Image 1 (cartoon, rainbow, N blue to C red):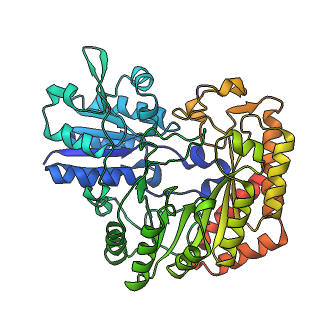
Image 2: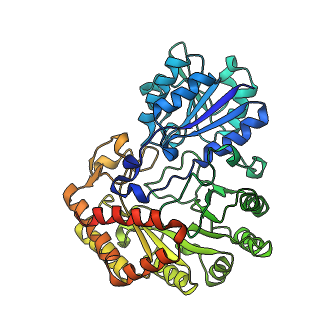
Image 3: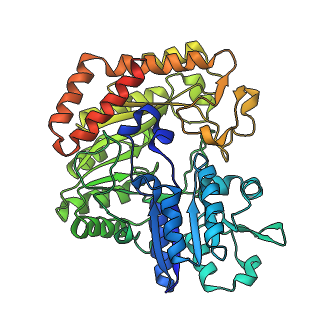
Length: 469
């Protein structure tokens, strides 16, 4: 059978995580696994190449392409990896000119015309969700591309964009992600150093779309209306991962995991009933947790919830349209601790209208909260986000796609400097992680997590390099 390559392009851990590269994630792209499940239902052989996770170079990929001469090569790309994807497409065309190169992912969906204009070796772009589009592409008449919804393609040196594809309403119709064709799965992949209790691990996204309106988020791929996989579907996936692949840790990556309480309750109760000895973590929104649901989550194996707190200043919180009160956030963190679940807070430094005073409020919030972990990122106006078009009104914005890794500073709000943002970021990390109680807690986590001790130690070394500069 003809082959359909699905490629996550080369992107070094240095580029993705900087000095924290040893603590970074090498988890595979779930979207490629989902597409592979669709492709093999239509009599093509999917081949997943996880270049970033496995440390493969462009030359390694080209060697496989040259041997297989696949009919299609689908490349997924974020804003950070789009240039790597463009270079890879150019190399593929040189050794296999008849291969149709398809680009997809959040960057292409956010700005399709600009992306296709810049990278001439992409033959076709998939805008939005890819499963139904790819199925039509490989079963239909390629000469009639204009009839396929949700794509942008070249014809006679002109770009043509078809009408938008409706979102998939019934997600349960999708086949399970094709983890079985991932090279080395699950042992070749690992989560970030402090995001797992046991190995091997797998990540899951159990919903699509987000109803929240935060100005820094790009919702162009999955939209603003939340759709979910059913509890029955998720439990079946968990059983498959547990019994077939030996998975013992799950990372639920969707922002809305705790939003639908009846579904969450059913998932937790099924994990308990079916005696799936899993530990798991998830993302959560502060106004969605309650004592009863937290108690059940803990019983079902949940050990950590990560909250997108972003800032400790209510004025900034309102400006970014988070629709959240800091007092609710504080209450959620207290309830989580009372349920004996660890909490992590995501924070952003350098948001539009940020001041030294607002950053100090964030520092004060972190100091007085019962958080167990924090992550501090630099504000980055990504293509597709609401703030992307107006960022320059609020500060200096370097619209450089290759720097958008949340670590490099591409935006500096009026009244602050790049050096001050770096200093504040380091100050926050020092004050939180160099506290005796935090150090003792981390030593306990190392002792109780022998499987991840090497990754944890490497992560600590990287962290110390950052905070001690």
